[in-house]
Length: 244
Ligand code: PEP
Image 1 (cartoon, rainbow, N blue to C red):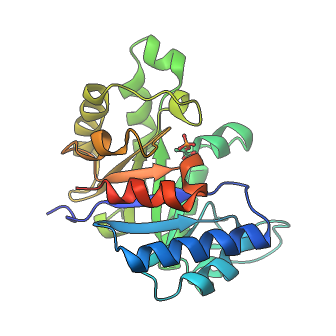
Image 2: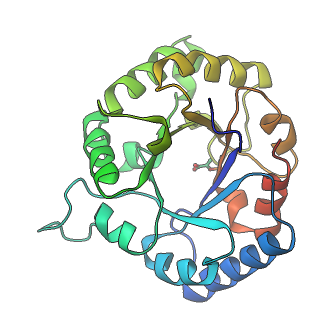
């Protein structure tokens, strides 16, 4: 059985100085305590804010996650952060294979797969991001692209509790564009047989308080991965409040 509660995850990306992170976390913690949403809530701040945000959100019901990790547990990897380090800070999740990492850091499916194993070994659940580019959708290759990302990025020992899939069409990220509800449902339904049964499939790409209810009402959608709108506590909580 699929986990009944939907998951709404906020990807803060490379945003926020210390005081911004503190303020956003305080607002989120207060709103989540005042009005607990009908879903699981997660925030993924930049690495520099994990410690302080984790301290502020402790006991609020909002979980902590990271945006990436290295495949090795420790060693000579200047500038990187390992999965055990993230777990040590209280992270429960780590986003892997986001399109921005695939594009700007050249991350291959194989690299993502190695990170996934490292995340699992450290006790973290992986949120694997996949999604087609505009030209791939236009040429009818959206599903083939997503399928090959899933098959190439998911490690052998995958199991539903430690894997979440985020379908994020690249052309919908940060653009205000969103696929039709039929296209989201169709892709999620097509992806499902490729995953361990019960894996949650999130939709990501320009989710905001206005479109959240329609997207999150789709029976194939198990939650949302939210970028821009997760930087405003009220907007993020409005999206969470729109869950089934
Ligand atoms: C993302 O980058 O994962 C994302 C979904 O961004 P946005 O919500 O801003 O489109």
